Length: 325
Length: 253
Image 1 (cartoon, each protein chain N blue to C red):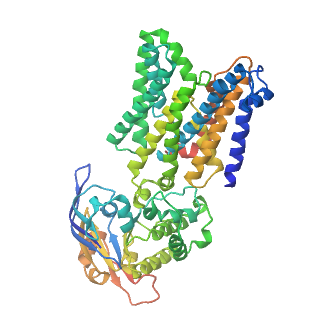
Image 2: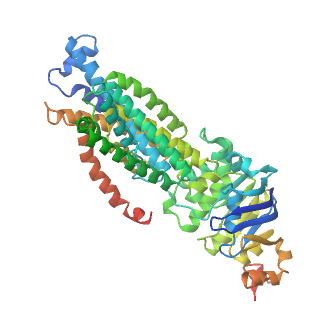
Image 3: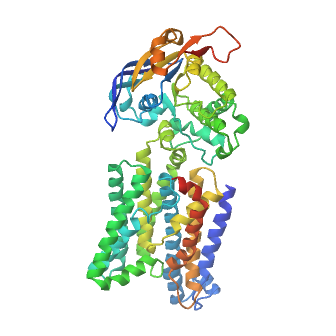
């Protein structure tokens, strides 16, 4: 249990920092007063309607995307895979664009559409992968192909209706500036169910790590489990994307970091992904709103600044393995 | 017991793999011997449930294709030729051998511990149990995976080229282990390149050539089939009385 103490303390500390940091109009003392039941209407509004939903969304998003990345990387035996590679992000992006086209002022609907897009693309990629043999390569190539098709549809829509591009750009960068409780309440149960399912079935991931044939010999339905992983990852990514937009690198950075510091069983790795993922995204979101205060950077921008160099580092570190794949 | 009748597997390039009839019993070591590409691994993978087939393959009278993957794993363990050194300690790897019995509700029980300890003992891997697989030699790695398969406690144990990367001493240890497991009632079915080893350490030999079985029998029976052996391997074997020799059966022209 020792290995969970540090990330738990870290997450708790970052959440406290996130609650207290930000707009100077509300001080630490005010926050304590509001929590004790006092404070003005404005202070209560800032804490309960702005900061807390934002923290919940960032924490949920970080945990969901990290576990989604862990599941995809583990089940497809590829450390560079993330929901983006499988076209899940592009699917969500297309549906956001469609919602901007059809219902430009309905924020809640946009989130729902993002989730539906992510899920639909995953189901489609899964069917395509099953039809092409459900191997590690066929799943990735199916995702890349579907992603390419969706990108061309997105470009087509933007060419015909250029006014929709603003919504798409904001969504693609990602962030929690406009987080509302409604979407958090909608996304959280899905994230919870998906994460619990992933944790329950984690011993299968340990067995799958040994290779498809050995896993089969040990009694694991390899194709079925791989399908389940992709589906859980889609639910997690869809729910996360609906809250925070396309936050690209979380699903890539956190699982790879966890693998480096924890070499034990997958259930423990997943638990660490949840804690570090939540802590990392809450920290990034908090920094994004305090670094250039009183302005705010999109959280996704900060993530990309950290994530892109990290991706290059993984590529360099795995050059031997990548060279033989 | 494994019973194969009228088995046919079609390859994408047109040729078919066929077995008219083959019975493999518990309590004996059976070696499938043949040249590269003759279908040894195909036969093993079919029994392991990895390939679709026509005809009948039964394990204890249950048709293989109708078996649930976990039920099959309880009856027949399978270790492929290609294994990989993932970052994992030997003890945890051997614990994975208990997966068919628990699935995802895995808690290592006292009964499991007995199987795990026994597997580590029998393969002489106890001293390496805390060692990461990436730090083992090729032969030690194969022994670690063998321990996992033994911990699985399946009636039949299917091993594809089990002595690959093993030095002479480890190979001898492996054949001792195979004999011990057979004496305990397990059926060991393995593919083998080395005719001398196959004949010397097996109770039953399955001779294969060009995707079908040419002969089956005990080493004593098949050693007489010199013409058949020469046509398949370009060499025959003879039984030796010399106790100094490493193998009881040696190659002849």
